[in-house]
Length: 224
Image (cartoon, rainbow, N blue to C red):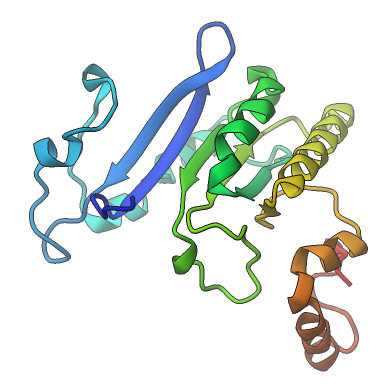
């Protein structure tokens, strides 16, 4: 990522036959013409510490790359899993602490709790995170860590347990300088949101009062 070898990088962690999350998969993409030169697979893979026998190489059009999750979504809908509960955990971790933090959190994860979901771990460039009010660790290369669980919605005991696990994972990450990437399900109080936004909170609260004086927008988040 630092050398710009690939245009897109994503990492996943899956369970091995013993149920331990120790199988790491790297998805890396290099754009071809007209965005860049025709990719040379041998050059792209040279020097990577991977298992060459497990490498899979595919050429896709740009649209097919963007739409690559559509078959998985269709399969989940057909299986009736799309409308299940999604107690997701999404965190941004300091790069210097990611290995230790992820190891601790994956020690507590079981395939049964993950369900048909996925675990993501991959680096991002801090200087590319320009979305207003996005809170990220003070690190040049933070990592996204996501546990995208899926579980039956009527099993409220399991949903509550997984939400509690998300909260514990967040507290562990926050103690090391990590932040919530707020697209998941971490129980947060209004005080937590104020801490999350930190010095940006007064500006956000002022905008809320100005543009939503009646408090009708996204009330379920419980930010204000």
